Image (cartoon, rainbow over all chains, first blue to last red; front, side):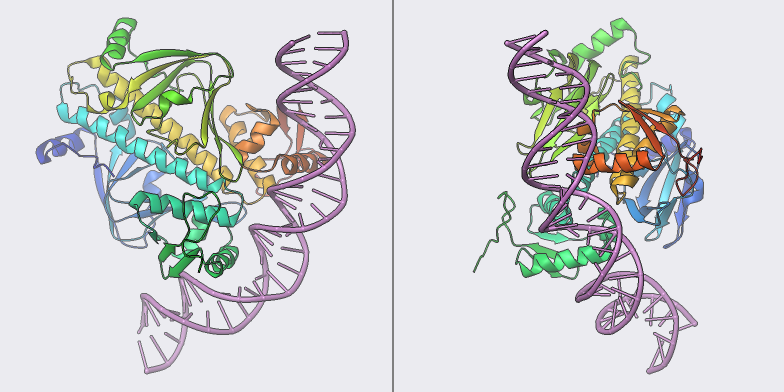
Length: 222
Length: 222
DNA sequence: AATACAGTGTTGCAATTGCAACTTTTTTTA
DNA sequence: TAAAAAAAGTTGCAATTGCAACACTGTATT
């Protein structure tokens, strides 16, 4: 992920953060940090650590809306934290810096090269995030659990150019990310194993099929 | 949707488009405009008309990935048009302008106020689009057809502050947008009607339940 | 080390959904 | 305006899924 401060040296970064009325926060592991983001006008940037945005909807379903890591941005300007359904959880010790949304979009101080660069960086980060959202939508629009799992594996596998997929989740969270029932997912993973399409060792999944064949065939049928 | 040229007067707009190596295109209704966007480095802006980005995946499922209207942006920088699965279709006569992605992100001409303003506009548009993507994800993560429909209706209804929902799709496309089977959707709409939760007249749906109650109750039970 | 807790695996069963096939209605086109 | 095409409605049935309940395992916590 592009660094939001890419091409901005330390001194300029200080000036920038001051002019955007930034505040820094530290959140210990397992703390909920929701309260700061209830207002519309804050943009969070993660300096280190990572967060999960979790939604528990009116039917009691738990959904992992995002995992946000280093250099990524978040805030209610891009995801409405409406009602009491959302929780933002620090999965590790996490440092964030919070900026004023309006300052970024309506700043008029044209002669600052670093501000210019910052805008370009934010736009690039935003485009990358959009790509991820679309990938997520491609997964969620698959109609069976099997196809959701395979689409998810394929995307990660393509990203790293490897047949090994290292899950960033435990299996409970993976089910909540794919919006499927955990036990039904477990059942389908078992099927995939038994048919020889994947191999599972902890959080490492090995893809044994030919991704580019429209029918999923094993690489080594014997 | 914010206009990409908001706060940029006509003359500056001309200069801007020239400096970003833009090209304009016109596409008649029902034409496919895919070919221009196969490369990674183009950003399209819709001047008027609208487009649909449709995916037909390896299982033969048709999914409407986006509907893009006036002032909205699109391109493979935010949605990978991988393989032969995608089609971009002009649903009306549509004019677009195409810019070079790299020019926008790595332009160094700092003294141009209009360029600065353009970046701010693009960022705002991008954030709005992200919000829409997240709303879409909130719909798709619902586990039943009924809940997908109701979530979709609620989002539109909230947007306009009205109990009337005017569908931007025909029912076939709505099913492809919600990633559900058309006939199963039709069945569920019938149930909702019979239970008195909605009323359907063509593309206008009237919500008869109290949105803020967690259990969907009719407003007029008698 | 003992205990509690979170995560995982398994299974039967009922509910929901997708699919296929067909009819009816609406819209488009020649 | 007649014919063709697209969209919408309907239904039975098989496949898939969610749910609930429970056992097992590994990891924290005191």
